[in-house]
Length: 261
Ligand SMILES: [Zn+2]
Image (cartoon, rainbow, N blue to C red):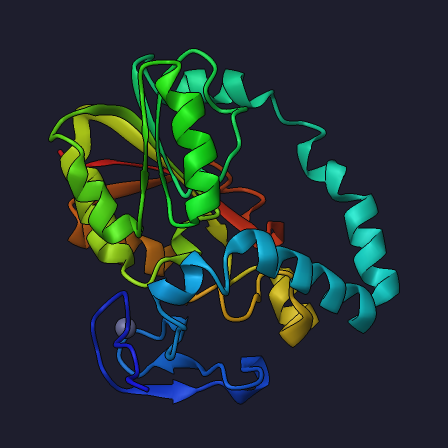
């Protein structure tokens, strides 16, 4: 199996992190920039069927229930705590994006983000893409079935007012290609919402291999904020954090990416 170069800086050499590797999945840290990533991802073909998110989610859920039943159940039970102080999604989105064309990369078959926008989507799971395409066509948009790195190129330049990458970039084998494509498809004043697991979260340092951000093999990039800034800059994008103060305690990075001036 060929080993993947660092997705952030394209360096080939990396040092394995055995405590975070599981089964045959090789989690390594880039020798040049330190980014931690899965070196031997299963490939897009596997994602379409064998490792499709809707299946691995159930597997991971079962594994965690068996592995750490009490803490995992507690975490699930109190998950609502993360949204106690948060405004509804459509209100937050209205602050991030101008009304118009909104793309959701890795959209699954969810519809709660459509409100007030013409919806477009990219989805690698065939079954989910079909459901989304039907929903979006009814509202003037459509959903492309395929990997983000190629599908993003099917949209026109300067087309989107907003792009959503919610819990997506950590799954993407070619995150830089997708970010470059997104920067091209974005209107100059548009914004990209990115949510990825926060590899520098305090919880990861405490929980170690049991940290909720690890998912095998479908999380292939483990970003820190500096990693995200570095890869975004190569796509001509600037990162503004939406959760700068509580970031160390947050298992996710939430950010808006805009075209560099
Ligand atoms: Zn690197």
